[in-house]
Length: 297
Image (cartoon, rainbow, N blue to C red):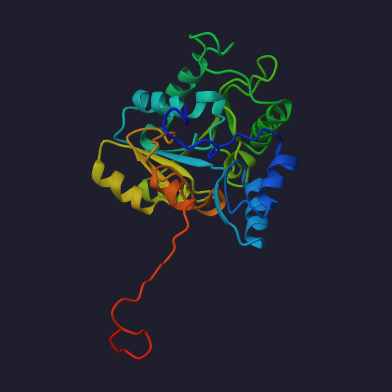
């Protein structure tokens, strides 16, 4: 496809392999001048350190614990459908999935009930079936991590409203937790699975504080019909992207994708990717006068 688009032969190569061997070699090789990595914060930190040690430019798009703020002017059913679409797509295995839902108190109960309904009606199965809403997690280790986050939250006082069970193989049921402790794994760490936490706040100020209560800062969303409040929140939320009136998982090939804090360094997409892999060079030419004497030549 790239060749058909006119890309010179040999400019683009696909190298397959595992990170500990293939990826490590790419980062360390002296002929590789720049690295762009998408993956976990833990691996990104290793790659960033190794690239910096070798004076290579590096762009990192890492994990997220993305907040979705739902303000009280929203219709709870509408908001729940939007949150479910963003949180449970690909079984939550998307770095921009909105997994921390922060709701103004007047609608939190109705919203939570509606979100539970949305989660329960999702159909799981083979992804080759058009009616399947979500499939399995990527591996057994991922299944164990997701289940650990849920069980730890419940043991610490969170209310399990739905889900929290393995549905066969590596498939985990869409899960809704109410009010997990702020020091729990389900609030602090990237779950990377179909788990949503719902927390109640008294007002937008508290919602923004809760949204920013994270080491991550990849993506966020604000659901409200009041665009003045939405823009105010967007400016104050600490994230590389804030989506208004929609869930936090959005994609645009030309947009600057990336995060702050534990979510990475730099931006990818469109001209931002081109700039990352382009070296700027200043070439000067002296014409008409000597650079040292100032006399005409």
